[in-house]
Length: 64
Image (cartoon, rainbow, N blue to C red; front, side, top):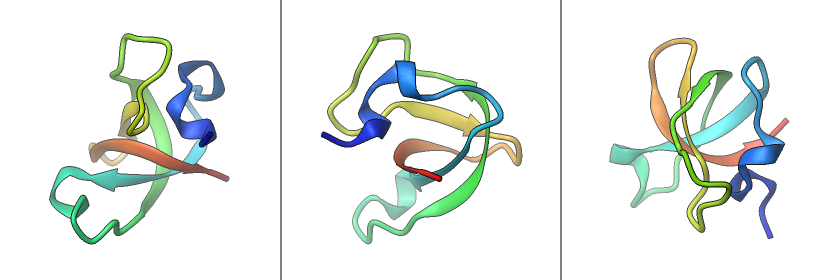
């Protein structure tokens, strides 16, 4: 299971790769630093939704 699907693995300040809503078909990864966690539940099958420091919002696919 991908570490990005569990909320406990994600903290503000972490360097992650997310997939933006418009990139879901292509699967393009956008890298950045987590500003805040938007998913309230402890896990999500498609990845925890976060906001990056640049304002981008997407689901975590990779943790660096």
